[in-house]
Image 1 (cartoon, rainbow, N blue to C red):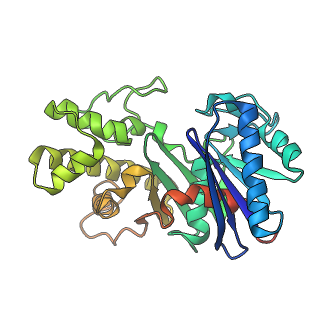
Image 2 (image 1 turned 30 degrees about the horizontal axis):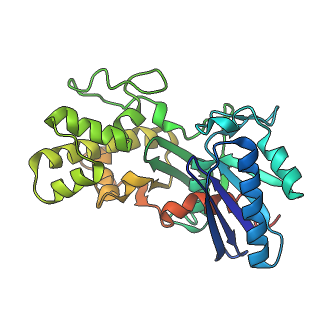
Length: 304
């Protein structure tokens, strides 16, 4: 039995999976904004799932940051009370068993690669389109971390092929301008519409208005499709994955994978009118919001 924990900024979700990936039980609590209390909450969830499954499971945890290998300390977590803390070691002491930690975007990608939309694919790129824009890369069932622990962080590359009206791009919290996150996150989608029309609408309202025939909303959605297509084409030019899996709140926009796929040929290397169809598939996540917690459980392969 595997236990996965998704340690989010507002909630901690836990799931117990069988060896075949079937869900046994699921629990959720509000995230305490305190380190010691977060440890207590995770330990409590694990004990509940152990009881539900009548056995002690392996534990994997998805976190909103990374662990520095030579120190074991968390860095770059937007849940700032985790930064500088030996989370893996402290959880192992609380739970009296080994624990594996991984960035939450990598857990999303791993879940979809193992038994989701990317199952059986050689290279899977998992994309998070939500409050921020992140990603993870899985090669033959293993997360690719990179020398700087930032593999898959495509959200902080610049949006490619900017048009005159887009230059130099909106500011990003990272200190640069024109980052993909500053164009493709949910808040960025809403900001673009407000700046073009003078009307502040939620992302859902924009999508609904576009479906209802509103020209301004349809234009906002069209710009989003175009920018996503450009960003993904640039990614595919470098990584050339078998499949791109879209997750996060923005991925729920109807027709988004299809719209982005249709725009890839405009920008892919050596693509032209007589080119073969793009081999890389762009699809929506099979497990939706549950992918992160399921991926954390899959940090322990069946052979271990």
